[in-house]
Structures are given as C-alpha cells and as structure tokens.
Length: 116
Image (cartoon, rainbow, N blue to C red; front, side, top):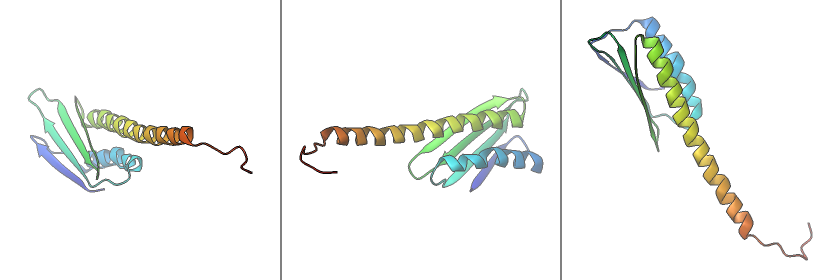
C-alpha cells in the first residue's frame, strides 16, 4: 500500500503511524487495486486533530475526514467511513450485475421441445 503523509502543525511518532497503517491496511481487501493513499494530519488551534484520508483506485476515489481530540479516535472514525463507502460501491456494482443477469433471463425464451 503506497501511503503519502502530509503533516500540518503536528508531528506524530512511530507508534501512531503504525496504528494508522494497521487501521487502513484491511481496507485494501475491499477494493481491487489501490494506487495510492494520501493522509493529511492537522492540529487546529483548539488542540483537535483533523485527519483526512483519500484512497485512489483506478476507477474511484474514496475520501473521509474527521476531527476529534486524539489521532487514534480520528483514524478509527475515518477508517469506518471509508469501509462504508467501499462496501456501498461494491454492493452497487454487484446489484447492477445481478439486475443485468435477471433482465437477460427474462428475455430468454426456451423451446418447449428442448431436452435438458
């Protein structure tokens, strides 16, 4: 997984970076091919962490953004939102395939004299 980090007004340690990667790597199973992942971490004046994650695939781009009091909390919410988006896209594609198969089945006519 090709991950690009962008930090603004913040520095994170290796433990937090490993946690972020641990939460995002399972998302690769939901899509066919992830080209790149961009993670933007920012700390605002109130001390809240804003995390924005964009996952680019050959056909789609999935994006989620969240602001909470901790990096771990933000990445948990972002990962869940991305999982929801990817699952919806996958179900939408599957529904279109099945709908097309049903329409073909309706249009087919079988000869009564055919032997099976």
